[in-house]
Image (tube, rainbow, N blue to C red; front, side):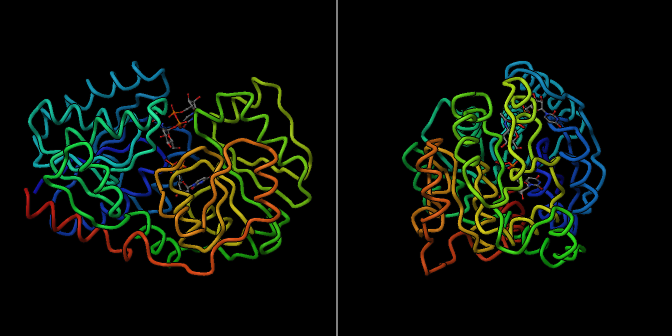
Length: 353
Ligand code: UD1
Ligand code: UDP
C-alpha cells in the first residue's frame, strides 16, 4: 500500500509520528509537510524529538489568511497526489492542512482516511469546525476516538466507513513518557518551578487570541492568582499580546513554545492546566491533571462529563473560582481507548484499501 500523509501544524506532527512508525513497517508512506507551521519550535523540534523522517515533500506554504493558505495548499497537494497516485491520503484533525489534503484527494478520487473524525464543537464560527465537517463528508474512512464522535457523524448522515479506534494522541503520550530523556527536576528547576505548585497556561484559539476582550479577561484572572503561571506562548498569541500592548506581572512567565517532551513534563507536574488547546485537554486527562478550558464549548466532551475538565470561557470570576475551588472527580475511567490506535488504523487501511 502507498499512503500519502498530510501534516502541517504542531499537533499533526505528534499524531503522525506514531502512525508513521506503524505504517512504515509494511507499507510506503510519503510524508507531505504543508509548511503551515514553520518556526523551529513549532515544527523541526517535533521531527527531531519524535524521530519523524524528513518529509518527502515540503510545500513551504506558510502563514496567510484562510482562503489563500488553504487554496495554495490545495493546488500544491494536488500536484503531489498526481505524481504519487497513492492508495490512501491520510489527514489529521481539523486544520487548514487537513481540509486542503482531503479536498485535493477527493477531487482526484483518491480515498481519504480522517484521523479524529466526528469531533464537533457545534460552533461554526470556529475555522476548525468548518474544516472537520467538510473533511468528514469527503472521507472514505472515518477514524473516531470514541462513541460520541460516531453519534455526531450519524446525525449528519455519515454511517459508512466509520470506526472507533481510540486516540492516536494517547499512543503518542505513552511513547513520549517512555522515551522522554529529560529529568523532571531539571525541567522544573530551569523555570524555577516546584512539583504541583504552578499552573500551566496555553492559548492559541482565534476566538481568544484574536479577541482583545477575551484575551484581556483571561490575563486579568491570572494577574490575581498567587501561584506561578508558566505560559509557553504560541506565536499567534505572542503577536497579539504585542499588538494589544498587553503586559503580564512577574508571576506569569511567558516562554517560547516548548518541545513535546518538555510539554509532557511541564503538564504532568503542574497543579492545573489552563488551556484552549484540543490536544492538551486530553493529555491533561491521561496525566490526571485537572483541566480548566478557556472556551465556551469543547469537542472533547467526555473529559467534561467524567469531571476532569471544566469549561470556563473567558470570565475572570469563573476562571478564578475554578483555579482555587474546583475539584476534579475521584473516578478516572478510560475514555479514549487503550493507546493502541495506530495499529488499528493500519489494519483498517489494509482491509479497506
Ligand atoms: C492552527 C490551526 C488550529 C490548531 C493550531 C495548532 C487552522 C485554521 N488552525 O492554528 O486548528 O489548533 O494550528 O497549534 O488550521 N505563526 C508563526 N510561526 C509558525 C506558525 C504560525 O509565527 O510557525 C504565526 C503567524 O503569525 C500565523 C499565526 O501564527 O499567522 C497563526 O498560525 P496558523 O497556522 O494560521 O493558525 P494557528 O493559530 O497556529
Ligand atoms: N505542545 C508542545 N509545546 C508547547 C505547547 C503544546 O509540544 O509549547 C504540544 C501539546 O503537548 C500537544 C500539542 O502540542 O501534544 C497540542 O498542540 P496545540 O495546542 O498547538 O493544538 P491543538 O491540539 O489545539 O490543535
